[in-house]
Image (cartoon, rainbow, N blue to C red; front, side, top):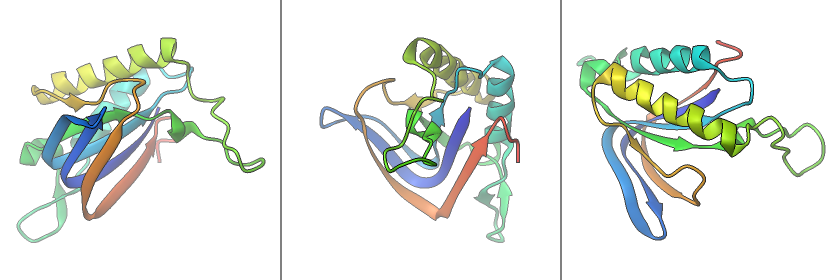
Length: 150
C-alpha cells in the first residue's frame, strides 16, 4: 500500500459538484492498493499513520500525533499512487490492484482507522470522480510505502 499524508487546516471532497465529506485540522490521506497488499500492510500503515508525530506542540515542534490532538482524517482512494513512469510519457497503472481487490482492502483500511481512533473517518466514494480541496498546513506532506517501510 502507498499513502500520501497531508497535514491540513481543512480539506473536502466533492462528488458531482456537492461536498461529500470535509474535515478541519487533521490529515488528508490518499491511499493506493497493490494486488500483493495484505492485512499486515493495513495494520502497519494504520499504526504508522495514527502514531506519526507530525503536528506541532506548544513550542511549534512537530511532536504530536493524530491521537494527541484528536485530529480528523479524510481518506481518499488513489490508484494513481502506483503509476509507473519509467518508459514513455503515459504512466502505467499495471501495479494498481483492480477494484475487486483494492476496494475491500481500502474499506478494511478505513475500518482499522476507525477502530484505532474510536471515531468516524471521513472518506470519498471509492471509484468515483472526486474533486479534492485542501489547505495544506506547513506544508507537511509525507509519502509512505508499506513495501519499503522507510
